[in-house]
Image (tube, rainbow, N blue to C red; front, side):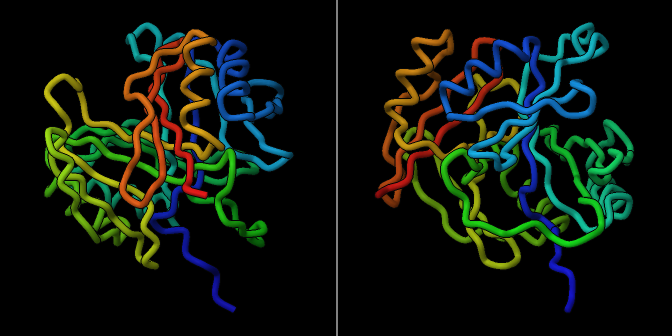
Length: 257
């Protein structure tokens, strides 16, 4: 039996923050995650009913000295991290961190895409795959790229991961919203032209919650900021974009029942 390809799948999400204890409380109230320490306590795993959902690390003194703000990182799956990193650079990406091992957890690199959105390439460890499941509450169900060049972004990610544009929606004043699918046909995200007030291209992950409106109430009572109030999106789902108390931007997604 052939091993399933990881190419272009969203395999992990990680919060880099200035206050891990405060972030754990905030996201616990917002999404329902609990926490589990890993790697001698230097890494925190967010879980939902014991299922790993995301990770969290403290920003290093070096990053804080560079005034890197708290942020979420998306890890995109690849079958060979070194080869994929080289291919990303050939397609115009810039290397932030070269491929390195995470003992027991695989291999990763960190890069800027050609429009300077940051993401990670991640090669999971060899061995049997974990039990597959349909994304549910606490999992990430949508990913969104705000970019300075939509066409160039599709060329880059299409070349690197085989993603393809499948539908474009006119969002009025917000402009065109372009949905993309992975090579297996799974529609999993959108790309749009970032507005001038957004300073840089970036990836935004959406976590699944029971109610976007209830999540927005949690944000206001726990020190966060609502950037985009709960709104309906095509298909009947409801979403909201927020900022946590440390300044990391995050989004929630409530599916139509």
